[in-house]
Length: 385
Ligand code: DSN
Image 1: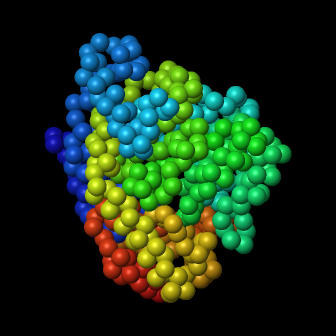
Image 2 (image 1 turned 60 degrees about the vertical axis):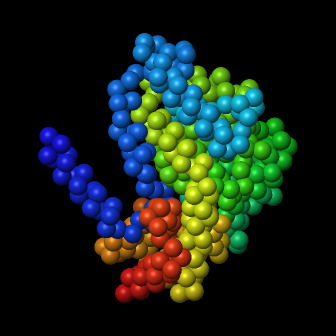
Image 3 (image 1 turned 180 degrees about the vertical axis):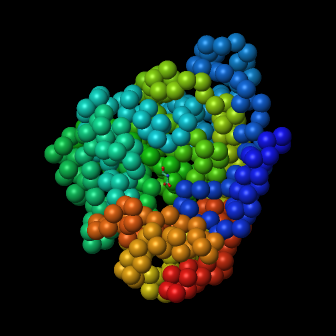
C-alpha cells in the first residue's frame, strides 16, 4: 500500500483483533472470501435502481449479482419467491428499519418497540433516533421479576394503543421469542408485525432459534453479526409490501447500492447454507451458555438467569462494579465487551449497571466450551481484583 499511514493503522488493527478476546455480541470475523468480495471491483460500479431497471449503463453483471443475492437470501430461510421479497441494498440495520417504517407506517403513527434500556434498539422508536421523532414510540418492557418479555402486558398495551406496527427482535435480550404469540397480539391490535433479527439471523439460519418468517410481515437483519457477513442488511417483506419497501430504500432513503457489499453478502449467504454453519450456530449458543453458567457459578448475576442465544447481560453492579468500569478493566487485560444497561437500570447509559457478552466472534475463531470456562474464570478474577 502506498499510503503508509493507513497501512500502519491496518496493521495495528489486525494485531489488535488477533490479540484480544472479542466478546462484543454484535461483531464477528468474516472469511477471506467475504473480504475478497468486499474489496473487489464491484465497488467501482454505480447501480442506482434495481436489477433490470437501473439509471446507469453497464449493469448486466451486477444485475446478476443482485438477483443471485436475493435468491440466496430467500433460499437460506426457506422462503418462496411467490410469498416473500427481499431487498439487499440497505446499508445497515438502522437504515433498513427506517425503510420499513417509511414504507409502511404513516408519519406520526405508532410503533410499539421494546425500550432501549431494556434491550431494544434505538431504531425501534427511541427519541434519540428519527424513528422516535417521525413516529411515536409506544414502549414495552420486560417483567421486572423474571426479566423476560411480558406477553400479557404487551397484549394489553397493544390493545389500548393500537400501534400501526409492533417491532420485536432485540439487541440485548438473551431469550428466545414467542413469534406466534406476538402474531396473535398484532392481529388483535390490527398491527403489522416487524421482526428485527439483526442479532440472531445466523442462529435462525443455522436452525438453532425459531424463525419469525411464519409470523412476521417484514423481517430485517443485519448481515455482519451472527450471520458472519459484511456490514449490511437484508429487508424481507411479504409480497404486498415489497414495492413500497423497495421505493423507500431507493430512491426514498439511499442512492446507489454498494455492490461490493452485496457481493460480500452473497458470499456470506453461500457460507451460511453449508452444513458447517449449522454446527457453528450450535457452538455459538453452547459457548454462550457455558460462559454464562460459569460466571453465574462464580457469583455473577446473569439477567434472566441465562441465555438461549449468542449473548447475555451480566449485572456487574450487584457485585459493586459499574458496567463502564468492568468494561474498561477487562479491556486492559485484552477482553473486549461493551457496557450495557440492564432491565430497570437505575444508573445511566453512560455508566450502566452491566456488561453485554457475546460468543459469535470467538466461536468463529474456534473457541470451545473449555475455552469459555477459562475465559469466564479470567473475567471473574480480573473483576474481583
Ligand atoms: N450496535 C449494535 C449492537 O451492538 O447491538 C446494534 O445496532
